[in-house]
Image (cartoon, rainbow, N blue to C red; front, side, top):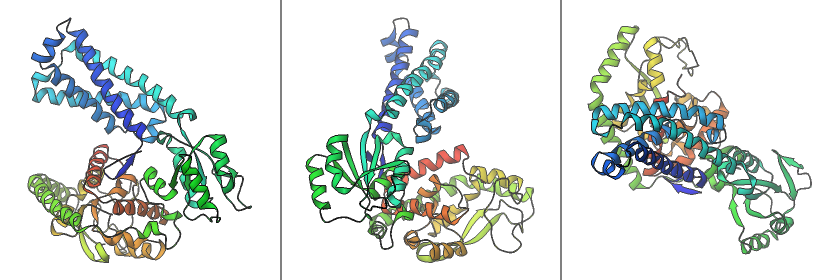
Length: 463
C-alpha cells in the first residue's frame, strides 16, 4: 500500500492508473503515426501533435476518474468497466469539443479522432481483462492469518474480501478460546497461537494481522519474534482496517481504546492554515458567485412563498451553537411541529427549485458566509441540529471526539456516506470523521474537495 494525502491506496490500483495513462498516450501516438502517413515527427513538432495527444489523454483519464473506474466495485466487474468506458468516451468527446473551441490549434484530424475512438477503448478493455484476472487470482495475493475472533477481526475480514485490489487473501484465523467457531464470516479457524510458526512454513503465510483486543498467552511475544525473524509482516488490525476502509472501526473498539483516544487536537499550524484558506476561498467564492447567488434567490422567491434563506441551529466546535444558512429548498412550514426531519427520496416537502438546488448541492452555497465568519471550515465533520448531536453523544462511544474541530461544508464522511437515517448510520459516519481528524492534513483536505466536486457533478446522494 502507498500513502498519499495521508490516505493509503492499494499499489495495484495506482499501478493500473499509471499503466492505463501510458497505454492511452501510446495508443494516441500510434494512431497519430498511422494517420500522418510517415510525417509523424514533423506533425508532433510543428503541427501541435504533442498538444493533441496530451489534451486527449488528459480528457480520457479525467473521465475515467469521473466515472469511478478505479473504485473497488467497478474494478471487480468487467461488464461495469465496459459500460463506463462507453460513458468515458462520450464525456471525453464533450471535453475535447469545448477545448478545441477555445484552442483550435489543438484539434485532431478527423481520421485520427475517429481512429482513437475505436482503438483506445478496445485497448483499455483488453488491459482491464488482464488486470481482472490478476486481481482475482489467489496466486498473486499475500496470504494472511487473523489473530483473534473479535468484532474488529470479523469486520476486517469482510473489508478485505470486498477489496481484492489490496492483494490480501485471508487464509484463516487463530483463536485460543475452545468455544471459537470453526468458521467466522466465511474465514475458517486454522489453529491456536502456537500454530502460527507452522502455518507460516506450511501454508506460505506472509502476513499476520493482530486484533488488539484479543486475549494473549504469555508466550505470544516469542511467537511474534519468531514470525518477524521469518520476515512475516505483523500488522495491527486497527491500523490495517483504517488503511483499507478509510475509517476508524468505532463499533469494534473497546471502551477506553487507545486507537480512539489517539484522536488528538489538530496542530496549531494546521488550524491557522485552515482558517486562512477558509477566509480566502469563501471570500473569493462569494465575490465571484454573487450574480449567480442573486439569480438563485430570485428563482426561489418566484417559485414559492417564504424566505429565501433557511436558518437552523447547529452544533459546532466544542458544542457551541451557531446559525447555519442555506437556500430554502422546502415549502414554508414543511415541519409544523418544529422538529426537522431528514429529507427522503421524492420528499413532497421539497419545492420545484428546491429539488434542483438539492440535486446540485447549490442550496449549501450560503454556508460560504458561515465559513467566512468562522462558524465552519471548508472541510470538516458535518454539523447536525443540537437535538441529534445530543442523542448521538449519549448513545455513541467516542462521539465527542468529532467536536474537537470546526464542522465543514464538506468532509471525509460526506463523500463516503450519504444521509444518516439511523443510529447505525451515525456510527459509521463517526468512523470517517475520526479518520479525518486523526489524519488531518492539507493533502487530505485537497483530496476531499476534489472528491466533493466529482460527487456534485454526478449529483450523487442528493435528496
